[in-house]
Image (cartoon, rainbow over all chains, first blue to last red; front, side, top):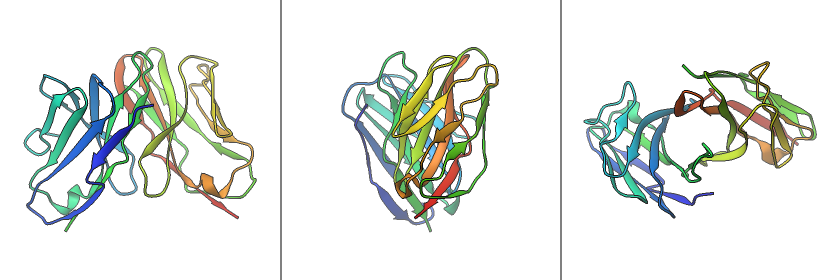
Length: 115
Length: 112
């Protein structure tokens, strides 16, 4: 399985500010995914990030609110912009580590609380 | 589109009890099926998976069989432990869609 780390592991932020979350993988991967898990809820896919191309966003998520970078095959960032309390969630990155197995591995998540 | 319907919780059991968490799915094509587990304060971990009909995934005493005829992937364990207390997510991927689709999750609490 992939070793995936995220920074920060948790943060408390003020309304109107932005936070950038980092995701680092221990090997090169083609596809990286960003999910949001609101309190007591399941996971919702925010976007898919491929190296060298623009991220693909799911319905209800836009680049201005959640800009994503994917500078290389082992790293990605997600920024939560102009935060409000409704953005309080766990944000998780995941990767396809094993080609053709359809198995995604997840990072430990970033717990964000917006006051 | 793809969807996963998962037994609603919470589920509370005594240690050594038998566990079943039901999961049914809707998908076009032939998806792969997964159970993920989220322990308190942690991220998601892959618990087990099955990639084709009649496959049985197993790990840590948990089992689930891919039943195409009933479009189900129920999670079972013969004797749960307190350390199994977590949220369990059923998920599918593939068929006509590469995205991972999750159920709503089932909170399991095991009491000593």
